[in-house]
Length: 105
Image 1 (tube, rainbow, N blue to C red):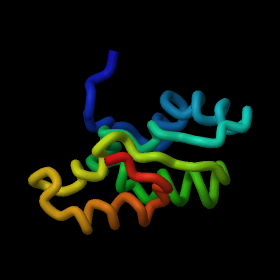
Image 2: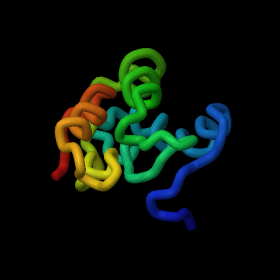
Image 3: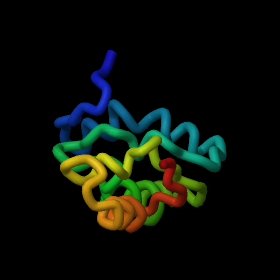
């Protein structure tokens, strides 16, 4: 069992081989909405809601070419600033620029 809002320390190959298979399968089957690529967790210190490499480069544009809709986790953007929700504009910018299509607040 995992830890909620944890920081997964793993190289890219490990991330792909351990955590990505369910996403590959879902995208192949035609899923149109993804939420938990952007979660409260982090990958190597980068919050997933603001991870441009995983959301924009890997999921949407270059590798998987996902054309569907990406939804943030509930109040996920608020956790991008410290203290929490201290800069709403920055939080939205950090989440939307990587490719989140709908923000859950």
